[in-house]
Length: 241
Image: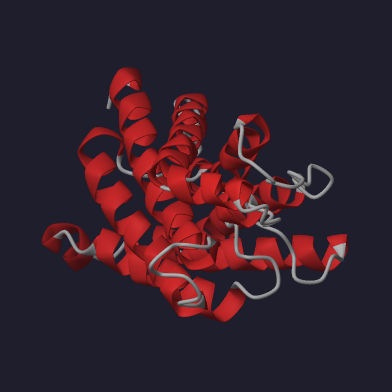
């Protein structure tokens, strides 16, 4: 895969991932949304479908990593780091683009909050935040949850039937749903540095009325935790398989 194909594939795929993922959170939490208060299960499946759509779209161009933790895990396992910067650059650009698209889709809902004087913080639509703020516990949660993603992803590559049938991405999408349902409660399961950092940057920049803080004091945890988890996944996979 050429650098151009990798970059373009990751931009498009990650933008779709964030459009679906941030979009489902916006649908559930924003006032005047038809999906208002539909709950955590809806959010978990929305993110899973975002992985499904984004990864299948990006796969012919880049393999559909959509996540620096996955890219790092593969690089640690294979020892091939040549295209890692290209992958991560594409993922970051795509994540920011997807966040902007989500904002455009729900523009009227964001504006309605301002027109009626509703104080509704919006960071949770774009990025994660802990249920209980404990940096050590939050970091450990993100590391473990990311291993729960990346290690199975690496192992799926050993199952020829998944690759030949084209269902590997479908299985990963359901894996993400499972992580959200089982491990998402403490921190909102970033498990992807680009997924959290790119939209957080956009949340800071966008003119969203009554948007509240972008919580930059917490922002390092959903970046560092998944990167550690991805690297550990590569080490474990290389040693065990």
